[in-house]
Image (cartoon, rainbow, N blue to C red; front, side, top):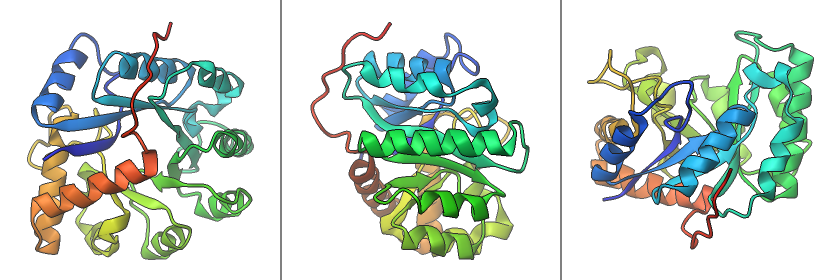
Length: 259
């Protein structure tokens, strides 16, 4: 049964070299479709290039809050490419845990890219760390937004706020070993859950200590099935429907070469 890794970075030259093709082939052999997530101009371009040349890959474009200090104005130019494999804006948001970019710069980048998402009717992959008070006030200024809170590890209150706004919740390898968060993970409605790896990061049990890759998304599905006392296939079936509903990438592809 096909499963979707809704958030990975195997396209990114900062993390992968020639091994990316082997990683992709292992994903295909495991019947995994992948969404390659952009984090800056270069990464977003690489995501588009990778998706255009791989049948089971799609892409998002965006500037991560860590990288917002380097600018985000050029990201919209990537939408000029005639390619149906662009399925979202992201990974964008606010990160007050590390403050790698000034907070006011992060806010400006987020607002600009949310407008880009609204203008192009695209869903958003959100990165939010220790910044939810500001995030919700900004989010609510953009009616009609659709998206997912990537790698969710916050509390039940913000989970409820997210669900009340129709957001999906991304779970990855963290959910297989962060014991203090299990109660929150178990509160996520199955019809609002997305599976992701965030490869090369956050490798799930039982592969801790290895570089993460999309094929391991099945282990995340298996873990959540055991937590909920339902089959892995049920987890996979519903989360695949969820990802297809949010990102809409079951349409016929019209990918052209991206240079």
